Image (cartoon, rainbow, N blue to C red):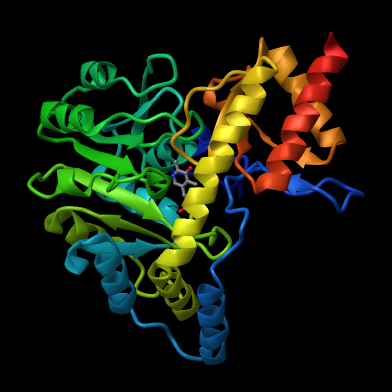
Length: 362
Ligand SMILES: *Cc1c(COP(=O)(O)O)cnc(C)c1O
């Protein structure tokens, strides 16, 4: 009998996610600046918690994540009842699409927005819709104009990846308040910790029914390999997401490590301070050699080249020098390279290599 096994609508439209390259064959001196990882690794306290938790691998994890939610709530000044934890913020994005968008529904995101919004929307059978940005910055008017009565979710990363730009609280409020009643605004705060005094949208959520925030342990906390994220929002939304969350979605190792990480404020403060210092240094060093970038609010810089050919040639040059950065043509930025802000030695090495590349072309 011929098989008629077919996937659900939308699945075949999903292009496989391209992660940042992590090694170069035959080289052991590679600097990886392609995935916005923390150059200082993970807090020692988090690593100790990881070791401790590893002695209990035969035990099932607790299902309510209460201890981790309490720690997050204390550090960020939030209500633990309205926090949900997931396998990276990717899983929270997935839950949102599964719960609120299906065939015939639209999921809105920005022109250079994070790839997972489109993937999760398609996986749920919904239709991703893109709103243009204004010179690589989220455009609230364009988002509002793109809304229809079928819009269910509006995703914006603030600061955005891969642009590094962000919009202010007044603009976010204007967006939230201008959306149709059926749409939930999701503020992806993967890089919120890198912005002094920014709460990721928490204040905007309190007092509104249509704003939700996602956060992650993958960037500032240096736990991308362990996969832990969380969301915060109105109680009815959090309750809905919990219905489809697997009871054992997080291991005890993940929870205990994340809890120690979020409580180690000293490590976090050191990393954000160093990121800020080296980000300014790198942006200036690149600008001096004719490679401009928008002022970044995150832990990477979006370096702009004259054209696609120059960006690709520089990427190849950097690889020769043992440096991995990220091509972002898939984000409709073919003339740009996204460079993670590394430690001082890595920043000097990448600036030096780009300078050599530029000199070599003259
Ligand atoms: C890195 C990143 C995330 C984090 O994803 P995790 O699944 O938590 O590792 C989410 N959103 C954006 C925009 C990112 O760049």
